[in-house]
Length: 253
Image (cartoon, one colour):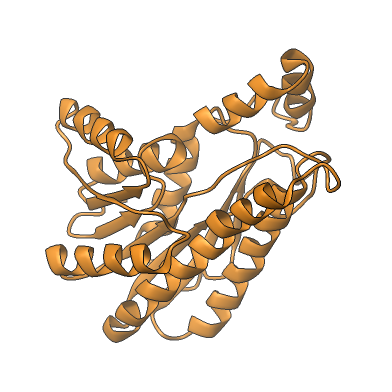
């Protein structure tokens, strides 16, 4: 699964699944550039990577903003000449039923999760089409395939990413550009930990979500990173428009 000579751009790459994927891709020989809104978090990720003998490029920006996406892609192309893999990982998660969710939370969720995925892809695809080569990986979710109560905005945004992935795959079929999505179950990440902290009863919330996974545990960041590595490698030309579930059996229930 070597990614030697590949240039990889990862949004939301300073922590969680994006960071784990960035480190793994770099270990496999890729030139990796991460993006995120927090410059300090980006710098900390770069510092931690250097401690492991890895180098990460970093560009601060907000994926929900068109100009930031354009600037990011242009900078990667100026520095490295191409983008072989785009991992649209940036995302937010807020708990709340349909009637409890505020307009601000709804709009922010859609702006980051859906608009951000679309904008980064929109800026990157013309370059990939010109080269007749490229891989786009979108971070959907098991909740982009099945809903759960109390996460209305997140369910909706991830369902949209699932359909956007399929739309892009069909539009790009036969061009040399593949588009797939990973659909993680509950993964041990800072974002998920924060949601559990906000629950009225953390232990009950953890137990509910653990019960959705027949395997009996939550997933680890590295397990999702390896699925992304699989999708990023060459030799999978026949695989596009797929939703790759890494969910401990949740969807199979």
